[in-house]
Image: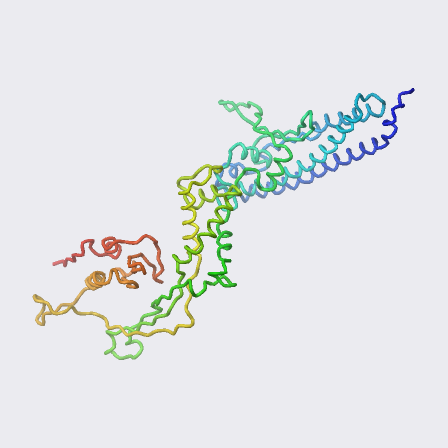
Length: 458
C-alpha cells in the first residue's frame, strides 16, 4: 500500500485549478483596488478644492499630497491565507492530511474568504467615496450629523484618505473571516511622532452596512421628502397637489388702492380712494393639520424604525437641545416633532387667487377731520394726524377678524386673524410671525405709545 492508496486522494483532480482560480481572484482584486484608488485620488483632489470648510474633516482636505495614503497592506494580509491554502492542498495531494474532510472544508473557507476580501475592498471604496461627500456637508441636509460616533467618523476619515492613518487587512485564524483594522496617526504632546494607534476593526458584514448607508453613521434627511408624501393624501389634495375646496378658507385682500382723482381727473374726488379687492384661497391650517396627524405619526414611526428620528429631531425640531442619535423620542419629543412637521408643511402650501370669485371694487372716503370738539378752532374741529386715526381705528377694531392696521411709518402692519388675535403681517397681508401680539405690543410695533395716550408737541 503506497502513499496514494487513499481513494479520496485520487479523486482530488481540481487542486491545480483551485489554485489558478485563487490566484486569478487575487490578481483581479489587486487590479480593481489599483484602479479604484487611482479614481479616488483624482476625485479626492477635486474634493479638496471644492469641499466647504465647515468641518474639521473638510478643513483637512486641502490637498491629497498633504495626507498619507492609507496603507492597505493587501499583499501582506493575503499572504498567510495563501500559504495556508497551499499547505492544505499539498497535505491532501501528498497524503499528509490527518483529516481530509476537515482540510477540504478549510480550503473552501479560504476560497470564500478571498471572494469576501474582494467584496470587502470594493465596499470599502464605495464607503470612502460616500464618506467624503457627506463629511463635506456635515450638519446640513444629505450630510452627516455632527453628533455621529467619533470613532466611526475617525474610521471613515482614515479609509477615505481624509485623516492621517492606515488600514491593514487581517483574517480570523479560525474562520478566515476578513477584516480591516484601522489605525490613526498620532503625536506626543510635544508634537513628535508617536506612531499608529488602533481605532477599530470592520469585518465584511459591517463594511457592507457602511457601504449601503446603514452602518451607524447618520445622514440628515431632507424634510421635503416627508412633505411630498403628505401632499399625496387624496382626501385633501388633488392629483396635482392642489388643496381641495373643503380645506381652504376664502379671504379678501386688497389688490391695489388708488385715488379716485387719478381715474376721473376730478379734484372733487381727491378724498376718495378706489379699492380693488380679490379673493384668495388660503390653506385651512388647523383642519389640514388635524387630518394629517395620523399620517404624520406614521412618518415619525417610520423614522424611528430606521433610526433617523433623533437625527430629524436634532436638525429641525429642537436644534438648540439635541439628543443622542440612538436615543428614543419621548412622548413630548414625538409630539413636538408632529407639531413641527405639521406647521412646516402648512408653510409649503400656496395661497392662490380664486379665479371663480369676481374682483370687488369699493370706494372709501378718507377721514381727514375730527368730529366737533370743544376747545378746537372757530368751527370746533381740528385736523387729525395719521397716528391719531390709527390709534382710534386700532381701539375700535383690534379684535375684529380681517381688520388691517398700517404703522405710522407705513413699514409695519398688523392684522386681526380669524381667531380674533393680532398678528404681524407683510405687505401682502401674510403672517411674518405665528405668535400673536397683545394690544400693547401691537401699539409699540405700529409706532404708537403703549398706553394709547398721544401727546402733541407745543
